[in-house]
Image (cartoon, rainbow, N blue to C red; front, side, top):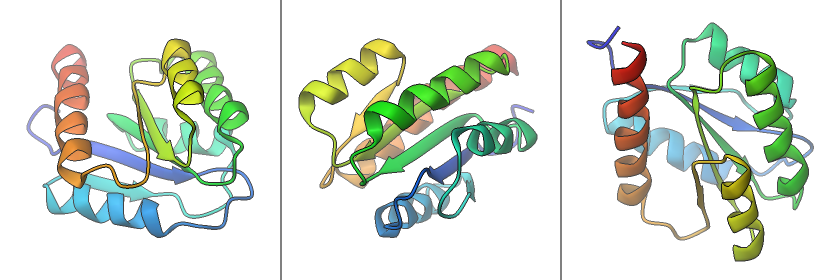
Length: 138
């Protein structure tokens, strides 16, 4: 398992139909040598976590621009716990106010990136955090 590239699910949840940022992240991670599974639009938290489990993903990146981050991010965390998959690194991004980002991190989201975050910063985070998970389970 440790010899395969990091496998990351990039997801869009709820009714948010804006996926340009998610596709930019997906491409950047892929170009950095990772396997990326993009779920497409309008996924439920259950579908996102099931995809991560089925694909043996090292991480889930959730993109939210709809303002529903305080609902959808915790629902993904709940699903990870319910499916005994809390070792999957969960991070996200979107138009999320700093105080909400702080609260999401307190609840278990590993990182929250906002528009304009440097792609290399996101790549470095994914390599470091998902790489740690890989070492633990691999």
